Length: 187
Image 1 (cartoon, one colour):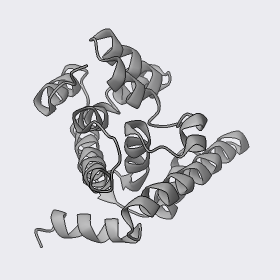
Image 2 (image 1 turned 180 degrees about the vertical axis):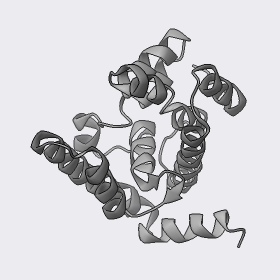
Image 3 (image 1 turned 90 degrees about the horizontal axis):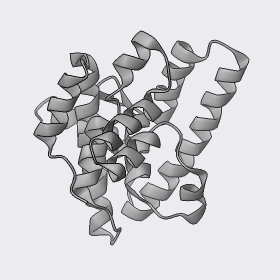
C-alpha cells in the first residue's frame, strides 16, 4: 500500500488546523525516525521508509482536535488517516503513544516502534534523553497517581525500545542528541 508523500502529509496537518509548533514537532520526529530507520536498514531491518516517514509526520494529526474537544489523539488520528485509505499509516499513528506489547515481546523492530521511540526522544523540537522527556511529561501530565503510574509504565517501555533499537545500530542513545544538536545548529 502506498503512503502519502511528505507534502501531502503537511497538507493534511494544515487541513486539520494543526498549530505550527505541533507541525514542527512532527517534522522533527520524522527526521529522527528516518535517521534511525536508515541506520536500522543498514543493519538488515525490514522497514518501509515511506510508511515510516508518513507515520512520523502524521503522528499528531489529531493532537489539536484532542486538545480542543477531548479524546485520545492517537486513536482519533488513526481513524482519520484510515478513512483516507492509509491503514498501515493509521497503525503507526495508533501506536505512537502506547506500543502494542506484542511488538516488544517479539523483538522485531517495525515502523510503529521507531516512530513511538522517536516521539519519546523529541521534546517540542529538541532531541533529548528519555529521562529528560519523561521528567517533562510527568510535570505536564502527571496530575494524578494513575497518570503518573501510566507515564512511568511508558518510560519503562521506552527504555526497552531504546535497548532494542540501539543494540541493532551499535551506538549509544546519547549520541542521537549530539547528532541532532549539530544539525539544528548548522555544524
